[in-house]
Amino acid sequence: MSDTPTEDDRAAVAAQIGRRPRGLRRVAHRCPCGLPDVVETAPRLEDGTPFPTLWYATCPRLTSRVGTLEADGLMREQTDRLATDPDFAARYATAHADYLAERNAIESLGTDVSAGGMPERVKCLHVHVAHTLARGRGVNPAGDETLDRLDDWWHAGPCVGTAHRDPSG
Image (cartoon, rainbow, N blue to C red; front, side, top):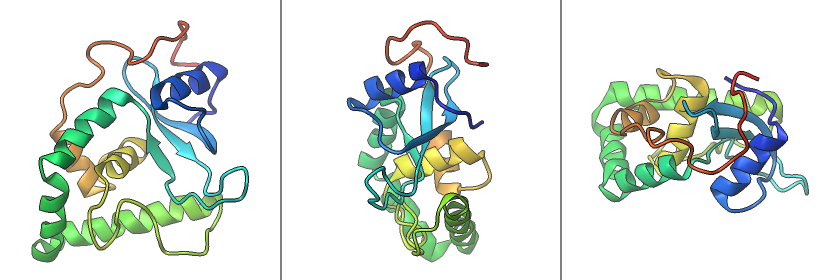
């Protein structure tokens, strides 16, 4: 899913991240409660500063749970697998290529740097989860595996208070 953010979406994202979102282009994924949980950002911010993180996880419940997995060593485990699991490494390299292609389709930054440590290491699980939620399972193995270890972060209802809105548009 990818849709133009409404003013309610912008307000929800600002409440989720504690500041006005920068470079917000689209809502890339919504949690089942209807709020954005991943947004797509412009490759360059309004002032021209390069911003290579195309997809950004915004839901504080989601990011908290992902942070716990980082603290528990999942990044290190996945980085170690890049050297020992050729299939995982190949799929991760393909995820890197997908990330660059999607970002470059909007605007090329003239670099092969993507995000989250790709393709040499797993640096930020938040980036990988956002990539998976934005593009779907099967694109980023680090994101897929991280999502497999998460509980239903949306189960308690919306993470921030917002005016009622119909998530279908």
